[in-house]
Image 1: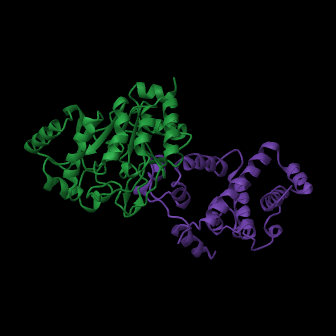
Image 2: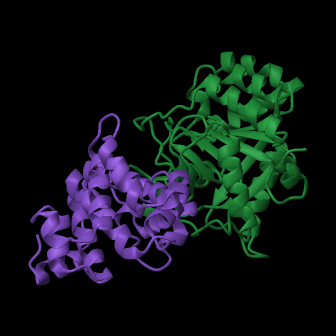
Image 3: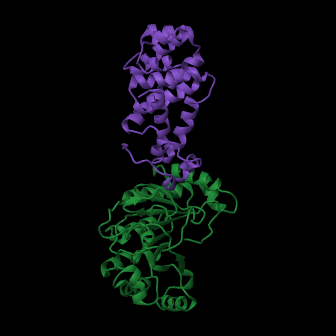
Length: 184
Length: 275
């Protein structure tokens, strides 16, 4: 049961059709297809923000999964648990990112720990972020990385609230993988 | 010259913008694209919104307007609205031709001096076969309305929507519309499109973007590709020909439509002459 009807391929609006060309495009596209002009700008943005870029994939997955866990987004946690495992993150790292173990128990790299603390202060708000966290982040990240990863937190927040509010369903394939590895 | 104006000039984009004025109707036709009937949700676009959109359409470079529904003449303000729209761009208004009271006909008289047409549906040359699709007394009411519009100087077009029509029946129909004062140039025959209620009755032809003119069609639910786009089936709006939910500024859906049209492969323009 979702909070919004998901548009199926036969009802896909003209601007959305290309997203259905290779089969089920997933619930984010199928929901956004209700407003095609939003879909056609949102998906390219998300592709750039969350997809391969100058920042390595592992670092981006740390941000996405940690943000999703902080925000309690069931869809994003489940989906990105699978993505993170596929990216090469260990079971212990994923468990820590999901909030099921202390971060310091799984992560020892000062840069990654600084980033994860940055994610938390950016994600939870409200108001200005703690100066100490910003100083720590700036000590480990250059301006381009700080900008990109801060935007990635924001993009993930957008998805977190969108997927949670609209109760988007996790794909059966992801659920099978989670079950096989003992994740919830 | 705007991008839209250039596209219209170069026949890349049709010049007409359609308004779905409403979705309710006094009839319940078997092939209705929008499942319109007296109980249908009205979903009125609104008088002021249509006027504002007409001005936007003209500024963008579109060259004509169309008003459809539902039955637009169920809207009390329609006769005067048509005159105001026609002062902005030439307009054609589609009607089932069954709600033309003497008072309403008089209110339409100013259209005689304006670039305005009323397109009335007439599917068969005899009452029984016509009314089987469109409902009791439809033929009689249309036969009554058309000459009264023509004698007031209002230009009338007749649209015949059929699955098939043989030569003999078509000739009887053409003799009839000529007798009513409607020329051959103002008579169009088109196939039933298998959307809306036509699906339930197994009527018509399947039609997609390749078959339908890319006429920007504005409804209260968004903007669609062609007036055959915003159809309703099973009480639910079809979205397969939806372009954008944004209707204003009109340049947003217009730009999206232009991109879609320009993205079509060569030779994939209208194939079924569904107009």
